[in-house]
Length: 178
Image 1 (cartoon, rainbow, N blue to C red):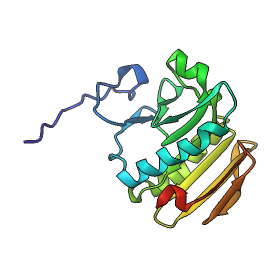
Image 2: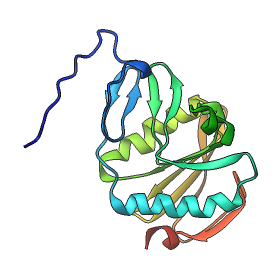
Image 3: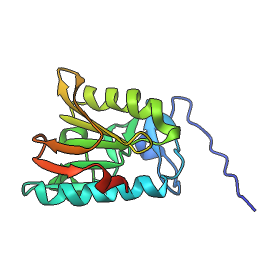
Image 4: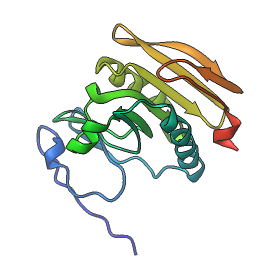
């Protein structure tokens, strides 16, 4: 039997501190509570593999988080699939946009417009220097860097990935997806 919980939404929307205990992932956008579906196992595997490639390339003081929360302000909180952020922010218990070097989204059929439009716009407005979007279905990695307050696409890769920013890294896209 499925249990349905009724939530009484505050008149002005939610704040991060008011969000009730929710099992699984949740995000808050302008006070609106979003509960995305669970990540597909293959997408989770791709994120873990990418984390394994990024981690040894990072300088001291930086680390990779998978599915970690990203705090923008009281009414905005996201959970990117992967973050490269300052270790000090992890230790302090709250990762803010200013602590993030790279945000990565692994796109699913249920997140196409969010991962292509909404999240990159929010991440760019918050000043996160690099954004990558991994599209498993089309076997594509799109890398972008901040140019003003928007992202400029730096590469669309369907085979050999070779980047210099935010860290030097070379790998085959198949290493993440197969």
